[in-house]
Image 1 (cartoon, helix red, strand yellow):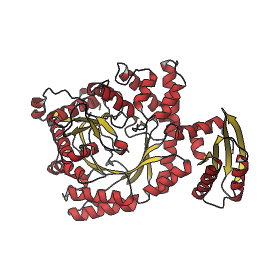
Image 2 (cartoon, one colour):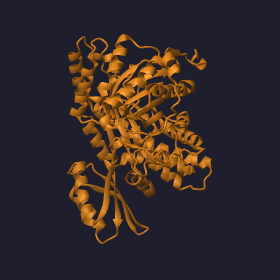
Image 3 (cartoon, rainbow over the protein chains, first blue to last red):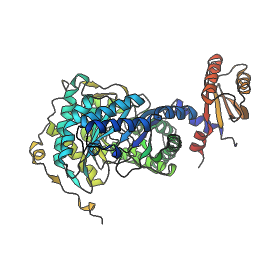
Image 4 (cartoon, chains in turn blue, green):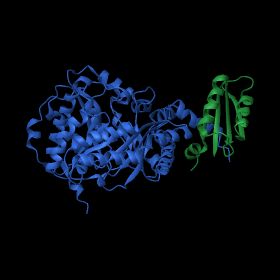
Length: 452
Length: 89
């Protein structure tokens, strides 16, 4: 065996032990279409059995891989076929949610995603029934995550679904008001949702996917920041190049883990999601990268440009490192899960409006933002509409995960615990969009959707 | 299975002896050693072959951890694939 360069070996070890390089998630996508029956209880039993029999080894296999390569695998997750489809013949969606939650608990995974409906153009009667169950499903389970796709570049924006999403976010938050509205943190409204996303809350297993697929999300903001610290005076071409090189290395680890996990679990290798996913831990922050590039604090003018460059360089480095890249792929900017974002939001340096601009150039959207509990549902819908417009017009995925925190207002802090972190309640513009949201209907697909 | 073992910590008498004795006792062959003092810190990288190992990977890691505690250093053992993936195209 050719000895690798000693400094290369030590670089890898330092990335893991000092700069928080980890595999953020190994997510198994499972097709549940063959669980469909005309009885909710039989469907639920089949859903439980299929998840358990296919994913029972997910946690031990991930742990074995983590030990073999000496790299933490933070989350083990399962995503399933949208439950609005799985339960279309039987109804009884809440029973299916309970079966998913039980299965997730029994196999020891962190989250299960796919309590989902794709309603970007319209919703069936069953899908409307399904959407009404989302708040209760989230409030009565621990591990189930939910999403709605309310818009796409091809279909435009379904404003009826946007309106409904605002309402259900408020309901979910209200039902868990004793826990700072945690149920709303498990729901995301998408434009251009992807079928192979390994990240929560928005993971679901798309209809175009194989039966059993492994998708891996990498991380490593701390590694990128540390690499940039070595070139404090480099110009932005050098900054971009350094980010690319680092992203390449990070993604190669993701590719290695994804292939190995797929092989050991008898699943197809799906994609590596090229993500820079922060955690609340010090030194694991996307905001800190932007500040290292040269901003006094995230939120300063220049933030959008720095983020665009970061996001693009991560993709360029990562694409060569993996056979298949997919999912959301880009820098995440969840407020509550990033120490630098939390600090900037708490100081008022970072506003929701600036975050909205940032979402136009990165993955994925307004994420994990706590807002006052008395925010009217139409304002939440309007935030979703704005974000969907950015996604639809720019042919990219965007998302909204807002948490209205009952009993708290701007200046207070919401505590979600664990990886979800804590968040200062941020100010939303309180001017009323009620008349626009009440109109309903559809925003037509943009002109560039007509590509054929 | 090929792996890289690293030892990082304060230099003292007997680190290499203790680690290589443990490896020999477990049937692990050392293929290459590179050792230096970097800014006062003892740093050693060993390329090892585990194909003749008498204990499984996780048991070997536990034994190395115990040895690390005794020596007051950090020892890590990782499959070589992670380094190859990261540093070779």
